[in-house]
Image (cartoon, rainbow, N blue to C red; front, side, top):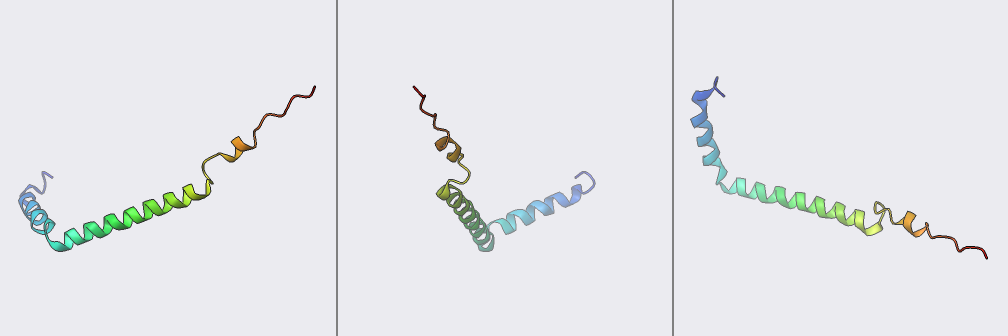
Length: 68
């Protein structure tokens, strides 16, 4: 950053100029919507069939009745 110290004010100017435009807001909203869709879709797929819950070994690990 020290080598390009003269470009720092211009960089901040570009950030604040382009940050509050409607295209930036639309892109941020669209990106967040896609992220949420993927996250909740994967979570629903994992939790709907209990493939990763490790509950099958618990169900099959019932103790045998003791012989008299």
